Image (cartoon, rainbow, N blue to C red; front, side, top):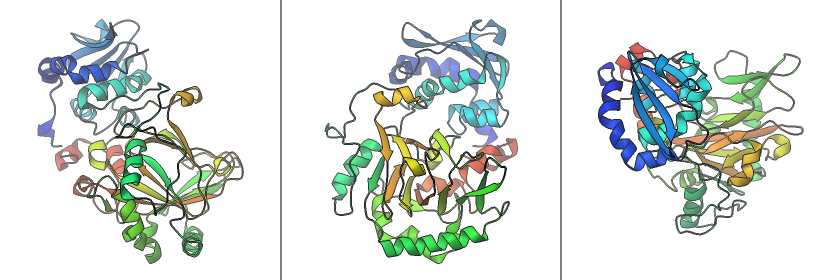
Length: 399
């Protein structure tokens, strides 16, 4: 987005927000208002207070930030940050990490809490909340969340399930011989990995020792791994819902391998509830599809995938354990040779192992055309978001 394309916050609130509030987006935003304190957003010299009133979202202009409700929060954004936020190019988390939110009253956590309702208002993204209701597919049929599929199932049945859940397990896609060969390649690359090599991620164990937790761009250093991007089985699964997705082997960290060590670790070995577009760039990255080839199999003891089914294309606040009973929660254990398939913005987690650990999963990801227009070789969307600046705005990121 060029600097000339900045969205004027005052004009937006005066001319656009009233219509949004009166229409469908106002109803969508109302779904996510429970328990929110008033929030005042300040951009340049103008300010607007967002509050829940009589079950609806109200947005009122305020002359200055101190006029906000005493029990609310006041967050100031630059025009660039405001534009990124209202267009979902950067999320509240990305803005906070970059130091682009100045909190003058209350807490930045209030901006995080408001984000589902604000995404509903600004972009029409529905809010997904715990209801206890059973998940249904597009034909109105109840979905069996424990169902595992095989390649013998029809594309229509696979697509119906995947459309409803955003995550699935497909059994026995790779043979034992294929898994053994891929595992040997992972052993070779892991032996070559070094801290700071830009081709691996590392965590630290309780003693402070470095522990390898991910290999990235494995596709550039192994022909066998690189060839997976065009494997007919994976191409079939990646195109169940969208036939224009393409694999990335030279960007977005290429084909990567998750290594799940045991024990308490510091770093990115275990990732809590998140979406793959959690820092922003939703309109660039989604609906990417990640296929996880299970080299070791997985279970709670080794830290298997968890997900809240049906949250793709929606905003679901990270759940507490007490919420899971009222959500379509999926635990996705696997055997070696199985694959998991998930849409980038489904809410999911890679929890710490409860036992010995040791899970190995190789991820091949397929992206929409927009990603290749904006993310060049050797780069990832999150790299650009984290280093975003006025100069990058001029360069056209997010056009």
